[in-house]
Image (tube, rainbow, N blue to C red; front, side, top):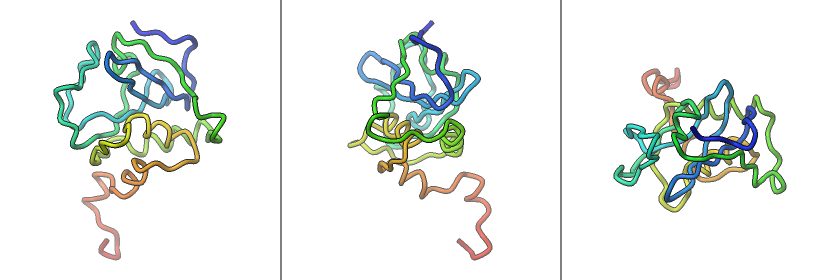
Length: 149
């Protein structure tokens, strides 16, 4: 089982050390994280492998941290706390959970999971949050607004 130096707290950024890259998530409480992963991926948490998955789109998911990390080690990482002001934990959770289920294009020039986590914790905007904000939630797409939009 993976371990952290201290148990994560609500709103913490979690850095997961995969064999070839770092994956990032936002801790939302009760053992769960919200993170982005390639759309259509069947998570193989034990290996952490996403090499064979085309990265055309990513989707935000809420899953158990132990399932996402699998056997990989993880840690709480607030590397930007000196540079940016962190939001209140309840705001971080609300921001992260509102994206669950949304699918957006993967931005090859950005570290999508890291940018997603950063965008949820801090008052900063990366291109990933901008893309997520433009996409309606699946149920919103089925129910257009009164003005036809």
